[in-house]
Image (cartoon, rainbow, N blue to C red; front, top):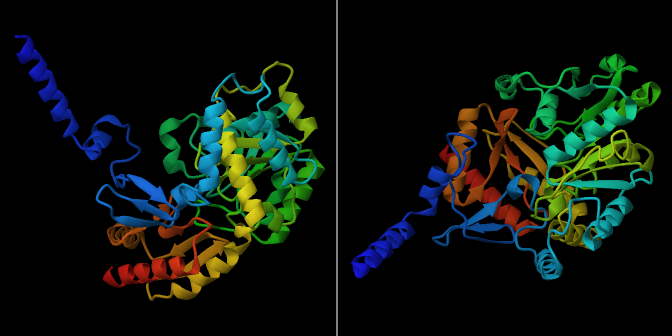
Length: 411
């Protein structure tokens, strides 16, 4: 009987090993849609992802603007390994002095104008937006916000309230009250900003809208109006930060300085990390009335901070992000096809416009078959996203474009 029981256990364990990861993906993971890409990845290196069968894929979206230095960057891997050997989580954020946090906060402040000197670490972009909203309300004593049509700021309740598209919001109503939306670039509409508004939240480059940018004058007029009314200006650099657009921060190209800056995605160097950054005067308002006005258990996890500091130092020392515009120009010169209607970009944050989602869906699927990973935009499903690791070489760009043009011919 004992032998039979043990044999049965072994047979069950053997049977379980035969269940593929793909089957487990669909049976045990919560799904975000009914049509996930479902591509299984076993390992990565540089700009490439590899499946279990060894098939190689060029990652043209960097995990949605995350892996700016590519995958498995040796400097980041070493920083993570070294920190894991020292310690991982030791205390909730803000209580203990931890070297990775304080060194990263100083390095971030050094990339920014003097007034943006206080960094509050969180875990993600949505959390950074939530923290920035709470900070704006606490500092100003106001509760109203202004955002922009076609904006995307995250999926938690406060961040979702700032998103424009009702399709993604209607199932979760009611959301936060007191939020109005303006058209990006419409200077005349700035007159609605008054002394009742806590903050205006803006993406310097609208990401999920399909890479949309206003004229430089608009951002400057917006800041002027905020100063006049005591309204805080929050810049969402969750996608644009850490060199994606050709400068370390996108706002540098538009002649304004935000009161609060949010960042995440590429910040973590592949690890989960986000932050909202402001002045000492504004940030200290979270310390009292009530004390612990904003708290997080895992925000600024030491391993994530170590990875982020390594990524930041590598970007700064190599200056590779400064080549983003030149590399984007190469993409644009090569991606010439009758099906392409327009290519919009700021640095290596690019949108390739087509006529419809039907075409885009075919391109995404056929590209994956051909070894290229791309994607669409939440609020612009008729364009494909190109946001490769900043380390992509000219030869890799040429190879990517050759494959994409071949896919377009098939479609």
